[in-house]
Amino acid sequence: MLPLPAIALTASDYPRLEKLARVAAQQGDMDAMFLLVEINRAEIVPDDARDIESIVTIGSWVTYLTDWGIPRKTVQLVWPEDRTSDLAQISVLSGLGAALVGLRIGDQMPYFIAGCLNVVRIESVNRSKSDTDPVGSLFGTPAFANDDDDLGPTAAKTQRR
Image (cartoon, rainbow, N blue to C red; front, side):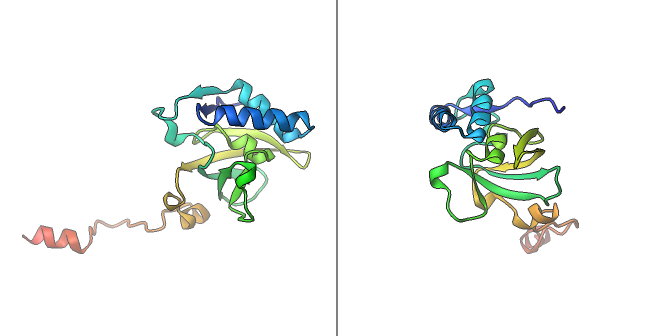
């Protein structure tokens, strides 16, 4: 069995997340029960913690892989009431959402979906959609990779002087 990674929750997300999970778990929601267990073992970190950019928080854009064959995917982790019909959003109260919250880049976490055990691995975490790279998240390369030493027209002008 895969060891559980350490997880971290921001001080601002923790109270709302704990209340949300507790209420849903009391109503029998299995994903909320999983989330509550994760919350109870989490380290609570300040919102301005040094490594906050590498931690999956509510609102983060997360690129991940799973062990069941779906290609690399990028989604935004959101509160259940903020979820829209956008397929790029995932609720923190879903099985995958509960598994993602608090993880860091490189972490792997087991979770259940439709009664089957799966593993998710975090590839990248970004704070805004503009930071994400849809081409790279599909193909694993930067959208505008430039492998040569050409620094572009601005550099050429500077070098001629």
